[in-house]
Amino acid sequence: MANTPNTAANDGSGYMLYHSIGQYPGKAKDMSTALAAFAECWGAPNDEQWGYALGQRQRFIDLWSQLLKAPSASLTTTENVTSALAALIMALPREDLEGRVVLVAGDCFPSLHFLLTGLAERYGFELRTVALREGANWVEDEDVIAAWGPEVGLALLTWVSSTSSHRCDLACLVAHGRKQGSLIGVDITQAAGLIDYDCMEVAADFSISTSLKWMCGSPGGGILQVMPDVIARCQPSLRGWFSQDNIFSWDINAFSYAPDIRRFDNGTPSVMACVASVPALEWHAAQDWTAQLVKNRGFSEVIIAAADEAGFDLASPRDAAQRGGSVMVRLPDADAAQALLGRLRDASVFADARGAIFRCSPGFMTTQAGVERLADALTGKKSG
Image (cartoon, rainbow, N blue to C red; front, side, top):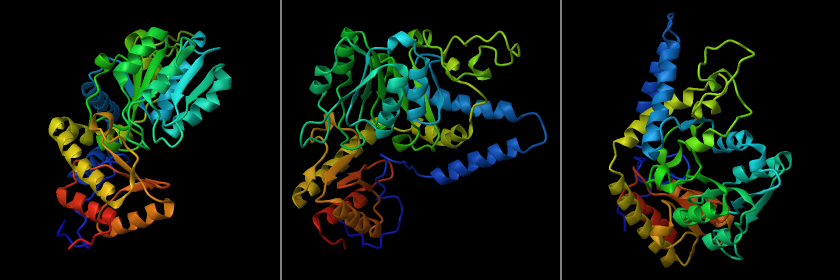
């Protein structure tokens, strides 16, 4: 396979952590330039700071809105997907959830399940978690549908699972949820930026994500997108001067929510993650994403073939149409996974593991040579 020795320079050719952080060519320089510009403005003895800082935040919001084809003024910033979901739940009318069921799949992002478990008693809902079938790597869509009746007040769908890369059938699930009269949210984190997501076409009530992973941004750059008809019914519990239509209204006895997504803002917003992420979002917006997805699919097939040759179980769907951008492989145990990661690191290939599940995501910087080094490590062959 690859003729590159195990001492291969770390040129990004073997970077496969797009399910985690995400890199693109020139990222360090772009981020450094953006943060230096912010520091220069913020440290200047003049009155230009807020215009610049809030302008960077708005640029972040505009780029995300463009990517998701979101309705105007329906997307705002959050710290992460967990805080985004919490903000939405705490803003809903009490009758939407009290005495009803919140539905989630057992392969959702664990942090969201931790949150829902803690909120269930406080907000009076039953948390119903759809379990994985025995020996399965992901929750089947038909099992979600079987558990989803009119008693479900809210369903949170995981578009792509972080432990299997299984991609659910959003069109089918959302259509079913509409018949049940449920609110529907989608965690798009593991595929946003690689697979097209159109808010209007999907027609979920809200979507949440981070600017990490395929978006290649910085931590702290989460987003909450809510459809206008749902925004109008929400009264966020965490509110402040930025929740108002006129943020400079100082009448402490005359608070009223902004008419759009701004009502989900609260105190002075954090802008550092936006400043650090805007270069990545701008780079992202200039790419040919059809070509990037084709590249990912081709590299993924090479990895799957190597796992098959090595006799390992594939923990992701074999059908690309049912898979995100990652490939997960079940190794004999956690020790075997860590040993593989060590061999890969020596070959300048970077992936990770969750227990015995080896996870890799070939992306924008990954090359054929990097994929072949990974394949050699999986099959026990020596490069060079």
